[in-house]
Length: 271
Image (cartoon, rainbow, N blue to C red; front, top):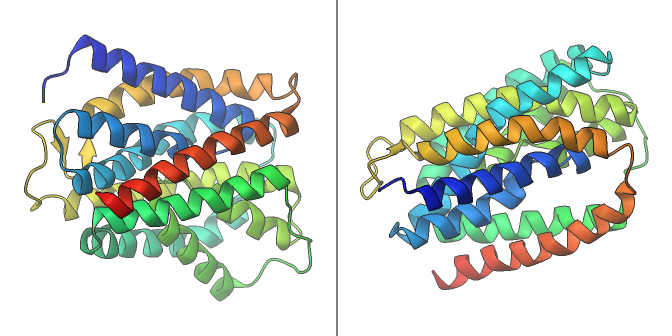
């Protein structure tokens, strides 16, 4: 697949936008990135089913870099609950590997597209309603954290997201302060991304039809350009969050997510 200047520009714009939105609204870039990467890949002749898988895997790979940028800012403010990171990380690695090396490889891209559409639609509804679970209990013990981490890692691996829409509500439900939950979720993005990416690379080694510039399921040019751009714009989004009406912006963005979810659902049903 030729890397043309137009493609670099398109990927750069995508990286700039997803990085800024991630910082502004506290969302993972995967919800925006996956649909657009799917479009770019199919436009370049990649099979629909394979394009969805590559988009999900590449989106997850970018989180390795954006999570580092994000967690440094949160750590400086002392907001990260490292005890929760240590408790959830083993389960996250387990769930991520099961998803990326097993279920992801076995499922058709069309099924993953449908699941992604449903997941994003659910997340958009949460964002639109600004729903926060009532804090009803304390953080569970080791077994409970491993179980929760496994679920977070597994679901993240199937949709190419950093897990924030699962981990933040879970921690809030466990009486973790919301700013600590958001910061801790950012830190959890790193083990989620690394474990899933390892699985995507291994499970993609024997797949037929991948373009020459792919490493397993990872589309390398997209990873490089998007990661470079999003790392610079995520802090700008975080600064803007203190100056803009974020609740109104979230409702507007939720409407955009519904459109993207509908597109992926359509791809899943008719690809």
